[in-house]
Image (tube, rainbow, N blue to C red):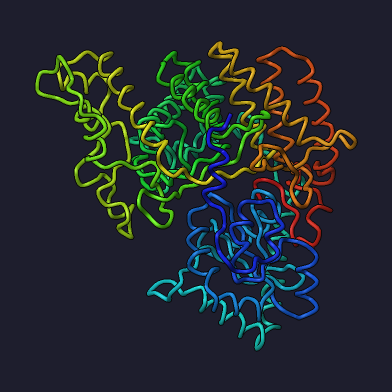
Length: 596
């Protein structure tokens, strides 16, 4: 059961005296975070589209999610600003979308942003014609003009003036870009030469990953660096089919090393367990602190697979830690799983949330918490000193200026394993098992202190896709580790999916639902049918659960869902699966498949 779930919501209750906008009627935590903005927000829907057409105004579309740090920043800097609100209300029709409720909307306009700018991300801000054709897009905009970036206000005023003075040019550019993207989205099997075999495809994938592999720190990029468990799973599969040749051993080594470096780094929460969203540096040291359910689910499987192949208990310990975190913090009493925990929370004595406040430590805090002397050491030593040595805690903090551009984290420390257990033990003349127990004692005391801190906000949305992934996580770990209680939790998760996210009359999945403060489960304000990813990941979860439990009912349901997936999403003309049903997208300018 999720501990403190009620407190998550109560501690972030709106206290503003302003009249709420129409988002107050939504269930999405992300949309509700904007319900008291002075912006006349609309949810995605026909009411907003009709208003834009009737008043001949461009649509301002802003997409994000509830645990997105920079979404919070832009909301505070710009969307709470009355002057900005007045500009938006007078000259635009403003629409807010939770990307996790509507991944189809997010994918279409992210494709446009990535094609027309230097990158993508959230918050994503796109300007559309009343016919939903995009013509300008970007991500975060600062509140003031700078040397390299213009402010959100400046962008709004420029687009307003261009719409009034050069509307024909904007429409022409929009149609040209959209036509180009549409041509790309309509590539079919017959338009290109097929690869000679699945083997050739997997070999090419492996070669591409090897080219960008970080030999020193693991992972497959510079910075920011994401865990990418799907890549790790591919490498393990590649090893399984190529284990007799050097490439297979290399694939396994790349995956194992990456998992070890992540397990030691600050991207892993060494106190409360689980993994943060990504690392801001190559070393996996300073994370972006939000915790997403889908990362926990996929990493639990990856670490379990690593243990299965190596027998190294480091991997099984990490997998069990992830699942313990999910059980304690992201699990609903009915068996489902919440989506995420925020990166930001209110620091002790602070007035407003800051990123990482719940997870960071100062030297003085650890000294005060762990003053006990350590017996048997070769020099005078306290538990706090041992703890700080092992986890890289310093007087001045271990967060560099490049990871803290605003100077908010000075003197703070992210726990990251600096030495192996054997090296820490040798440094102080202790046995490794003694050090292990001492560190466990220290972490338990830090957990108790954390319980007094203001927790990060909980996203109470429960998505079919992510719940399916989490069923896989518990089922695979339970089967490999021989833990019946983990298989039981996977069964509870599957029952939750069938009870709350499956429409029996139509045989179709629903996208998501919400848990209210009382613990009951409710559907979204607008019922969204499941997308391709919901079917794919729920089916995967059911198959893993069938293998773990040997209950044929889960296999039978998986087969029925596969038939429905084929009927709803398969492209009989061009091959492959569309991400969403054509009619669900309504007037969306593109109908996309994954990989486009």
